[in-house]
Amino acid sequence: MISVLFDILFVVLISSAVGCGVYWGAVAFQIWQTRKRLPTARDGIGLSELEPPTQRVCVIVPCHNEAGNIATLIESLREQDYDRLRVVLALDRCTDDTLGVARSAIEDDPRFEIVEIDSCPDDWAGKVHAAHSGYIGSEHASKSEVLIFTDADTWLDPACVRACVALLNDRGLDFLSLLSTLNAQTWFERIVQPITAFELARQFPLLRVNSKGAKRRAFANGQFMVFSHKAYRAVDGHAGVKDAILEDIAFSQRIKWLEYNGGLLLADNMLKCRMYDNWDEYVRGWKRIYTESANREVRRLRRYAVRTPLLCVALPLSCVLLVILSVLAGEGPGWVGVVMGSLGLGAWVVGMGSVYRMSRAPMCDLPGAMIGALLTGRLFRAAADDLEAGTPTHWGGKSYVRKAEEL
Image (cartoon, rainbow, N blue to C red; front, side):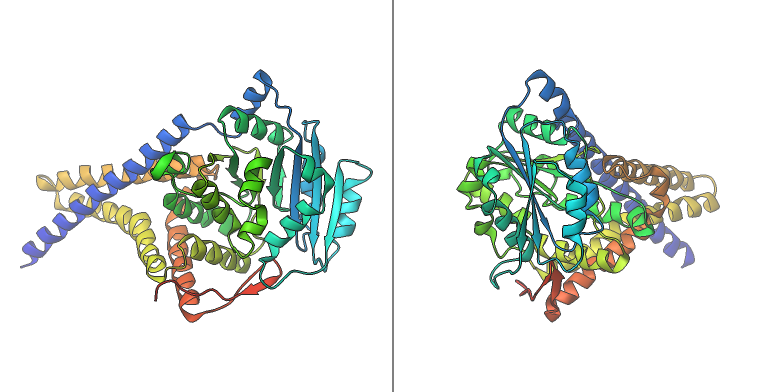
């Protein structure tokens, strides 16, 4: 009886090792293909030197209580090497010293202007209304040929604007967004963040987002969005997505529906961001992102809550167990298990390593990936629970009660 049970376990572990090898091998191949076929924001520097862009550009920054971040962003914008640039800071109902910090950081730079906002209509999302107010309140914005919307907690390389406008021109795009390089300082940024971001990217593969036609997936990153002015007006600007909690996805969907060309590329350290300062903010923020990207479908979120630990934890651990049991079994079929388990585990290391390399996460944190996957699974489950219970989400100075599309 024990022998039969061991044989069954051996077959199950072999199957898991094969699945681990196939899945993580496919992940590594997909990432290799993505890096091979798509440029990054850094590649735009070379393009701008070959054919310098000439469009007038206006950067609009919606800000709500960003006193701790705004000076870093302003400094990076002042260092931009693009000479046809103007910046609008849209200060949205700030109760801290964002205004004072911003004025001090701007000094006497004439390229900057500040728009103060003291209220937000009930039928608008806070950040969306702030960006809209910055646009309609600026004479420079109305005269610009390219509009860039970026968050106050970002940092731009001095060549970022120039590179992105060059990429917009070279790829014939009407809309371009960047996946920012995320900072890795706190324990959750180092252990959980790479997996959390990977799970979102898996739902929206870059090659599909940058494809054309029916196969194209609509997705963007609201931390950095570049529009041709023509396309921005065609989608009715932020008024067209006024109640969207994730305005970036809403914009990308409208761009797709109207058959404009959109793109999403890796920032490659040209745009950096620290999304959240503490674990509570991290959980609250990613629950919002996961809920909206899953179209508020409870069952979909619960499926992801199981899938993430299964693929990132259970499969590689089954490979480890297979190797251990096979070594104990000695010669004969046992060595087949050693080989299969080693190959499956090796595929996980290569695949997960590709994820870390693509996101510019420290490779030394790779051993913590399984813990990150478990906590990411909990994020999905918590998002599903909140959605099912009708728990409000707080974002951009307002609270929102979201209705589940599927119960």
